[in-house]
Image (cartoon, rainbow, N blue to C red; front, side, top):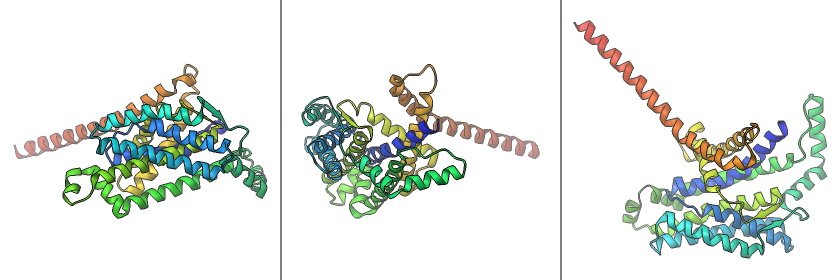
Length: 328
């Protein structure tokens, strides 16, 4: 149980970067971008083929991120310059990326099990420093279980996700970031102030899909393979993380919302892991579980709000009846 929960937290932090990308497009830009399902695979495909061809894992990951930025920017161009509906622009790019990803990889999937990846390097550094032995010894003294072999990956990804979170917070507070936020709120208003909304949308979608592709590149290296079908339903996973995070932690400020999105991604993976331990559910039911989680996350806050509003009205009615009775 501990190992499975550890794995859920670990993968949740990696997918949190993808959720931050979805947050940028759906919440900040108010753009229903379905490019995510394709750009996630693009990041993994570019990183995987680069590593196989001898590229350093760090450079390969950066190349995957850049590929995602380009894919997102093209979606923005289709919408702004081609005047294509936002939803349709994302669908067109998602479909196109399926073939592009196949071209990049040369076949439906690539194995990285025998390659040096970013995570194998992190684990090698961790073991080389002796941190794992020291931590295991400390836990043994405390009577706790040994640290899983991938503990180094968790620590590494915590630092990476915090860096991406802080980078997102900073970007959204810059002049360009504020303009992108304003574009998502009211395009006509920001256009009246002589801002180039087309460029802002293209940039925003580029950054969003860069985060998604970065997550895809990390997932491919974490799992040891890149697959052309790896991104199917990824947009729902991202939305689930955003909605769950906002429902549980709130969205009062940008800083709170971004940490909520990361928390939502982790909780989502934990809930899915627990759900799959139920006897009548199978691995193939994962997408169904995701859909149900999104429905629950969307409906529950409304039910709670409606219940509170009903109680408030009942309280007011009681007070009014009490006042009338006293006056009579």
